[in-house]
Image 1 (cartoon, rainbow, N blue to C red):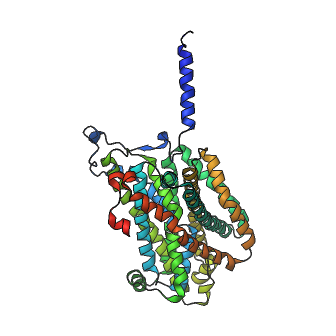
Image 2 (cartoon, rainbow, N blue to C red):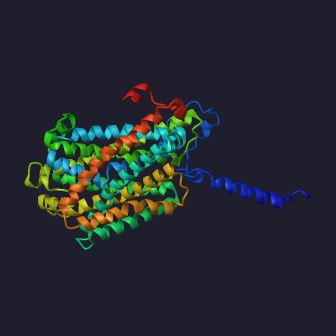
Image 3 (cartoon, one colour):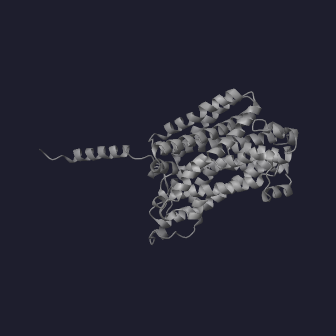
Length: 447
């Protein structure tokens, strides 16, 4: 028998490579999609054991994932919780908003820690570390929480479109527009992760400017605002709002999302110094991002506390009619507050629906190990949320009060889903065989 020719050998090698690649596991980002963070001067003497010195340029290169993560702290569900907390509880729940944001930061830092130290995201680790029944339960709960969040996000965008179009587009039409817009923004990822991150930065800036403008118009009482932040108060009539504030700030799907987003930067998990460097930069970036999100939530809460706390409208105000009430309370002016509210709400809804789709792709791909094209995964993930959202839009289109009650209870649902993301995170981040030297200490493990 004659020996195989070079052409036959190369063809056989190609077929073997294709077969091997078809069995590769699902990953958050392909190698070619990751951003290279290089330090040529330090790399010449780097043995991987110590982090390089601080660099503003490197901080800029690591900036992005934390701000994408922070969108979940600013979605329409959060705005619903903020305005109802302000209208019903006044300034008294600002301390809870601050501490919930701080706890959310700690959770997100642990999520980032898992992603950077292992090179894998939380859903992938859950798939490997838990038995099949537990993995499926965790996946179902993550999807349930994501669908609940998506309903709020898409409905919020649809309400904003209705406001800005002066009622021309009904709620269900706004839902369809929002769903299609989501694919446009995800299309930006084809031009690189940084382009998508820049689009999110613009949306966050629009939110910040819109709600800061409202805060300036309303001029809340500074002393009461400061007391609300520093003095913990909780009345029996504000329990549901308090639970909603926690639920809408700490989002279960966001825990899975952040552990995947941090892998958009190329970090070698085998080099301890490089991992520590990435964690340091991500800690700074995430803290800055959530500081911005806290200020935006603070603006919204205090505007509604100043305008509606103690009034007859306090119990009936919600996301649907908030713009109307704001216009009646603060008037029109050169830039009517109704449209400023609508612009901010639209930016919140659009940005959060995109991150929701992003999170859905990572959750589905990680738990089920599905290697699908990104557009197909996005389509499947969107369908999970859009179908129930259209039903909600049609059913509740003529019932503003019912839609607001639904949004409020969806915030409560988020708080009930937190343990199904938090327990796996704390369990995995404390395992030395998974985290190595980056496992968390016993104090956090017990807590």
